[in-house]
Image (cartoon, rainbow, N blue to C red; front, side, top):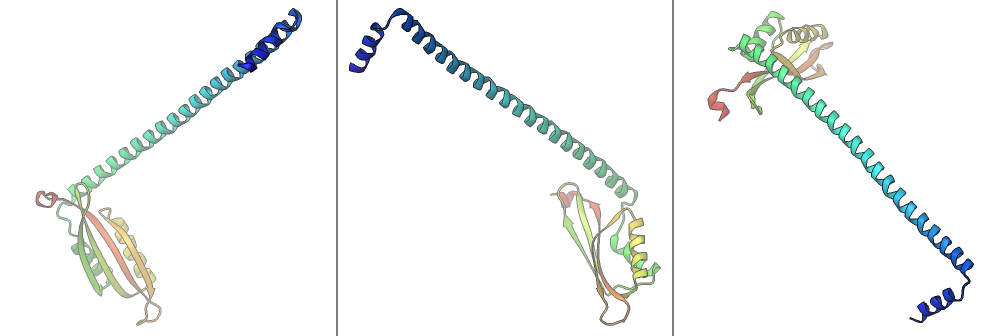
Length: 186
């Protein structure tokens, strides 16, 4: 209380001119502080609105990208379904054995397998080892495999042959998609 009494006594002791001067300085400082706070408030609002717009643009771009990707997946699925319908009785092992005969190659080892995929397909995979082939024979094999749209190459391992000089040993993994049957889908 004593502090407030000192201030009151000081104000009462001032002349009117000095009182106005102090009052104007006080109001100017108060106006300056309020102006600074209002400026800061609107500056932050502007910065946040700008950030919201940037985030919204990123979100819209992400949605466009996802929709485009979904459309691509849908087109690819239609292409796969069309290929499957064209050759509904396709057997990867029979095709590959016929291709080996055509190219006069013989496989040392052929391991077929099947893997359930999410969705409507089963992946039929064939891992084959062919020893003692030339690069030319390998290229011809790969070209023939590439011609068949129903098949895709998953893995290719090439090693220098330890048995036959100037040849290579090849392990190739190819696969195709097959439709799931009703028993397999459950």
